[in-house]
Length: 207
Image (cartoon, rainbow, N blue to C red; front, side):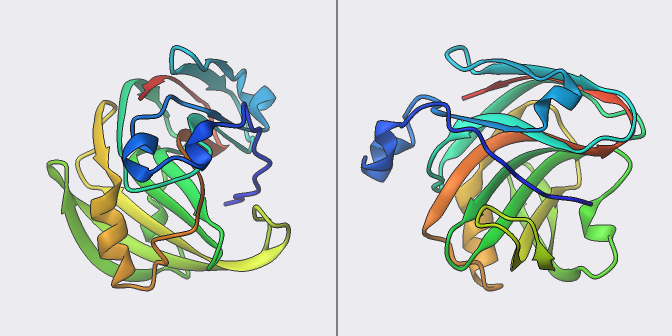
C-alpha cells in the first residue's frame, strides 16, 4: 500500500484558532485531493458531498473535512461500492508530532489493513455499535505530510461494515492513547475514500 499524500487546502478556516467546542461545529474547510484525477473526483464543499469512480490499478486519497483534527463526531452517508478493489472508506488524518497517520475504517474492499504483514495487533475498541480491530504499523522512509519520514500508522477497522453513520473519533483516540497515540497536535482530518488497486465507486456526504 502507498499512502503518499499531497493535500489541497480549500480555504484557511477560522477553526484553526477556534476553541474545540466551536471547531467541532465548524463547516467543512478542507479538501483532501491526492491524485483525485485518477478517480474522477468531484466535490461540492458547501454541500459536503463528493463522488468518485476508479478503474484499474491506481493510487489516490480524496475526501472532505477539516484543516485541524480533534475528537469530533463525524457524520457520513452515501454509497460505497469497492468491488474487489484494495480500498478504504474511512476517517483519515495525521498528527504533526509525533508524526502519525491514522484511519478509522468504516468499510473496505478486498483488503483489511489489520491483516497485512508487519502490523502489530493492539486489541479492540467498541464504538458506535460495533467492535473495531485495532492495529499499528511502522512506515520506514515513506511519504508523509512532511516529506519522506518514518512514522506510525494507527488503524481501527470496523467489524460490521457500513456506509452511513456517525464516528465518535474520541473513543478511538482515547483507546489508541493507551497504545502510544499522541492524541494532540492534529493536522487535517477528513472522511476519505482511498484506493490502491482494482475498480469501484463512491458518493459521500460528510458533516
